[in-house]
Image 1 (cartoon, rainbow, N blue to C red):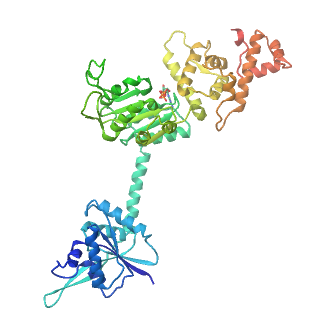
Image 2: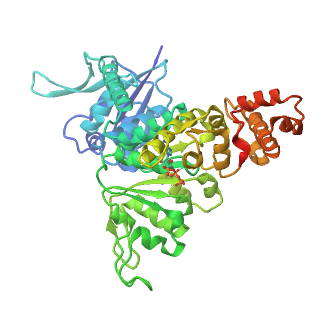
Image 3: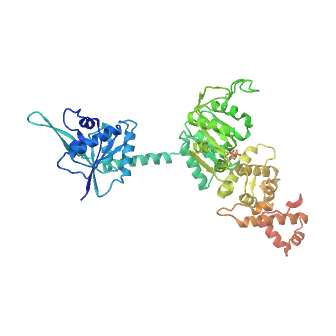
Length: 516
Ligand SMILES: Nc1ncnc2c1ncn2[C@@H]1O[C@H](COP(=O)(O)OP(=O)(O)OP(=O)(O)O)[C@@H](O)[C@H]1O
């Protein structure tokens, strides 16, 4: 046998009945308990009235109906018609009671309380907390008097099975549409050259976060494309067409940070000869890209936090705040969590900024992107230089590509592009060869630390590293032997010069290259 629980709000009519102020009847709660057709095992009453008043009602109710041990639960509501609050409080209450339970038959009483309370009972009974519903009923008797009773409330619909699947399907479709909708108005994303899944993921995330008016934090080493992403996010947002102001926080002298960002009044400090608007107001309506946010001094962090929280700033020397509507995209190459732990970056600001986090992995962790970037960079270099006298369309040798693919690229995409540009300018022939690259890498790859400290990644090419070492010594031997292969082979203890020739060919070293 299932246990029967009655759950109800206590309404004004109920209180009045207990206080002897009701001209007719005993009120809906007492009516339900006096219904001879049902005996409840437990009665739980919710009240948003002063506790004392409802407690007195419960005492009266117990005397009147013979029920004992009625549970009274105080509920603080924002308002008796605040649907969201009623829903939240009641569902929390039912959850704490570990409902629904198989051996408990729930009944909700719709009549006491406001219509909003009744609506929420219906919603809960038809979805998360299956329950029977009852309400007060009045019957007019033949003698003209009125009899109060209780009736079951039944609906011919089932909210959960009739409507929810359709509703959920619709919201799923909406989410799918949002997620799959490529923002055609954001051609900037197509400038981000990539083949790796990890970059595709970051681009997808950026597209999605772009349309929301929330701060974005972009993390990545120097040259990984943080500014490129910030620009693309701005272009894909509703702020496209408005200002995008980029500020390198690390480049501003500490004492000028506040005035640069928030502006100042004329005469605010020595040297403030005129009013300064500040980057926040310059970016009003648009986006402010705060690069190297980790370098922002603590007092500027406080002001930035206030600007984010309140949407207003106070220029240096002013007393009245000014409203600004600015979206912040922040970036840093630092480990910001470590900065927070070290007390150099405010934790509350970090959480404010980190609504959407984009992680841009270093180039050495996405080898599949390097090849594509080489092709694009070379095409760009050829295109930019084609009108120069005696420019030969540059191509890249297999050996040169191998070096590029295995370099750790501490300066990431920026370093890769500039290395290629230097190699293209300095190579005498159309083909950029291994030695052109080696000569133009800012740090020689033969540096033992770099050779030994290369980052291990999936698909790491150990053979390429060994080739690099071999190439280095073959070239040195050829140089020392003034291009004479027989002699070079002797330096390297290679038994015959044909073996040396084969190795050189395999490693992309030309025979005439050691002349300089
Ligand atoms: N995936 C990419 N595809 C094409 N170009 C890229 C890509 N990533 C970066 N770049 C280019 O590399 C250069 C450096 O990128 P960007 O300035 O966005 O890097 P950053 O992370 O902001 O660097 P820093 O931290 O030094 O300011 C820019 O010229 C940019 O256009």
